[in-house]
Image (cartoon, rainbow, N blue to C red; front, side):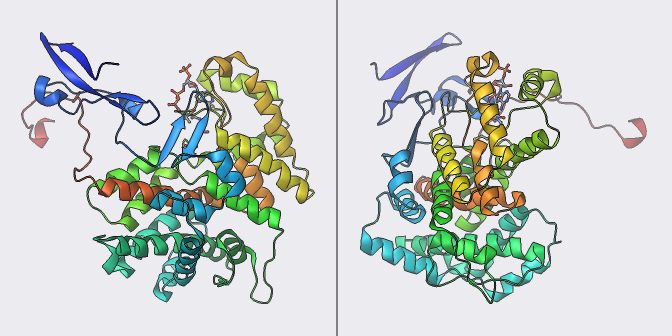
Length: 426
Ligand code: CMC
């Protein structure tokens, strides 16, 4: 393959370098386009724009492949843990036993919150959206760690990572309990990451929460499956904010805000809303699918479709299996799961979805599992944020090695120059 592309534009022909990634992905490097021709590219929604070169996560959307640092997601979900994968994403390699122990000890050491942070929870109304609380408190953490606002070396980075990874889980559980008016359950020094989260959510001062290992494993796998997904909306937000040299706390807080929307992380809530409505109103699958297909209704089949996957989202396949395990372990028969399966089958056999290559994504079944575990719907997107934290951190760190602020351009379509009109003449 040629190593340049030619572009003929305004009577000028220029050579643009071709960049090829380690899995054969190809890009035309347009970084000199404007300086050499005066043109920019226009790509609303960035469907054709590579914003960076990255070593972290590989997706082949046509084949339904997802790998973290080269490891297939299926192998990681089966054999690894969320904390091992966090280490892999952030530092590039799976930890050996010593590294894993050290990382776990650091997380234990930093899982408490400064008592003054607890006052922040009192200032939110009890019905505050948990994503608002999470992003605010994560950002507020920056004021408690002034020594970590500038990451000059690896040990400062490690200290910031440990604080954010450990405390995000504590903040999430406290948010839930505070909204219900429950007392706060502090993290347990001997419990591992996911078990500790469940302990803080559902424990009592007089009684430890001791869930079935299938539940702990399911939660850990859900976090692991959400841990990174290359340049999605929230990750691109984290990188863009970080590119201004904003600190890690502020950057991941911005990631939480970007994740909140129903087209991104908020889809896991939207899926359960949709399934609940279908069950409550006893909506026939064919009727609902017809409503979705009729664009004037403005209804989407939530949990379906993906910008990158034009095939099964590999995470959805794994999550569907976990869903069956959890529900059978807990002997739960959930009509929502039946609806979800019927809906999936109907959509996968319907020309509308087939021709547009719309398949179930990670959010289609995750809500059913979280519900079975006892996590309320309002907390679903927070769970996604806890899972995505190592990915945001890894991507932020990678971005911090570049020194150029992210700053897209635009094509202005507003009024041409006009003279100011005094108020009495408007
Ligand atoms: N239901 C019905 N039609 C859909 C759906 C859907 N879920 N998704 C896409 N389409 C249609 C869309 O109307 C368009 O049709 P047409 O070609 O006739 O105009 C076509 O498929 C292409 O859609 P698009 O909007 O150009 O696709 P996109 O890449 O911009 O959007 C998406 C991707 C994920 C935002 C979209 O598929 C969607 O809204 N899905 C539902 C929300 C959802 O499940 N989001 C979670 C995504 S995965 C986890 C995450 O990233 O957070």
